[in-house]
Amino acid sequence: MSTTPRRVLSHTCSNTEIVCALGCADLIVGIDTDSDYPPEIVAHIPKLGRDLDLDVEAAIALRPDLVLTSLTVPGHERIVEALQAAGLRCIVIDPLSLDDVFDSIRVIAEALDVPERGTALVARMQAAMPPVAPAADAPRVLVEWWPKPVIGAARQSWVHDLIERAGGRNLLADADLKSATLDVPEAQRLAPEIVVMSWCGVKEEKYRAEVVLRREGWESIPAVRGERVHPITEAFLGRPGPRLVEGYCALRKLIG
Image (cartoon, rainbow, N blue to C red; front, top):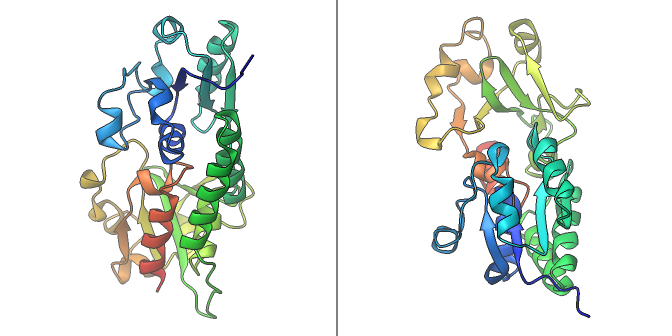
């Protein structure tokens, strides 16, 4: 009897984007409300609520034979446990590094019985993100997940890898965490030269550079003095899937 899934529930944007990039969108029977890409595909798929408020009963009613979920958002554990308690077959994705993201794509491709597509997708992504050796004066880059308090991507994150791959230096590289809070004295000591706004759950058109430029105690920071505060949508940096390529390209332009 074949174990190839025919009815896939995708919980989290990155998983949805991976399945679509693998050419398997026709298998998806339900998604979370935050899954918004590719728009022409997800527009016609039933949405079961935001990632932390997924309607588990509605998910069960769709009779999925595979659920692609994750632990990339704090609080997802509760949803994952409820899905597993219902007896649904779940694959839980929880990447930290960029290599973990590539492995996640391969795992999902294997589960969908298209392993060669996963290998090809990873190869395309790697080719589109060539590693750039950092210059001696490579800028110190802060990618902000949240503006108040300031929370940034630290060493245990694919964003750390993207910054380095794009030729920059992650301001929070010494914090052996997924993300770290940055207070004013620490910001003054580390002196970011580029600040990237990639605020979680906020649309890019609502990012405001003046929030950073007018931040109390940041007047002397190089990124503020040089007005090097730029938006990169969370969709390109916060979702561990194919569009990290777009995040890399955006970082590369800023780093120069």
